Amino acid sequence: MSLRVLRITLLLAASISATGFRMPVKSDSVGKPIYDVRGAFVTARPDISPSLVTATDLLVDRAIRSTLRPILLPRTIIVIRIDHASKVPLLIGSRQEARVTVQAVSVGDGEPIAEGSFVAAIYQFGKEGGDEALAAKIADRVASEFKLDGSRHPTLATALWE
Image (cartoon, rainbow, N blue to C red; front, side):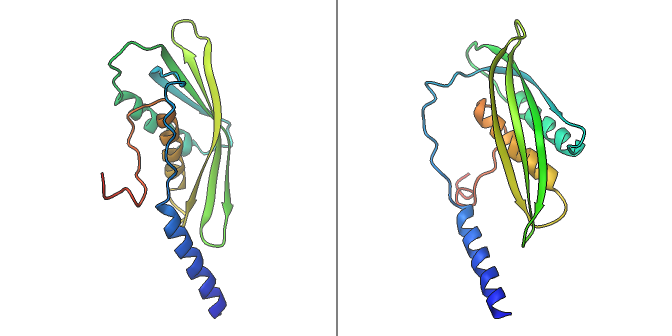
């Protein structure tokens, strides 16, 4: 029994110390094009949770509406497709992840400009709120890639600075 308590304590200590870790962002924004995102469309297969799709759509839309561009940029609409979502139970809590494909489409001619995909994952200790937390993770990633002014959640180490 004491070995089990020791393992859980070590796991919690390691995870708490890892929450403050954040890799520095490489500042090579010169090579990346920036777009004036006018709207977003979130879609998913029927087996994906509708609350995940709705929450992602609302958060990305909020980030788009709060972004103002001072210069004229190519106007786009982004299509966010949640390809796969899964929930895996763990020893403590569960891990929920989604594979997401994002495509930027030109407003002028409807042609795709850029496309990329990523995997977003969260760990949760309770049974409630997993879809909202995963949607926030997806929306934060989309907002950072398209340089939108969405509300980013700071890490534990930088929470006192903001």
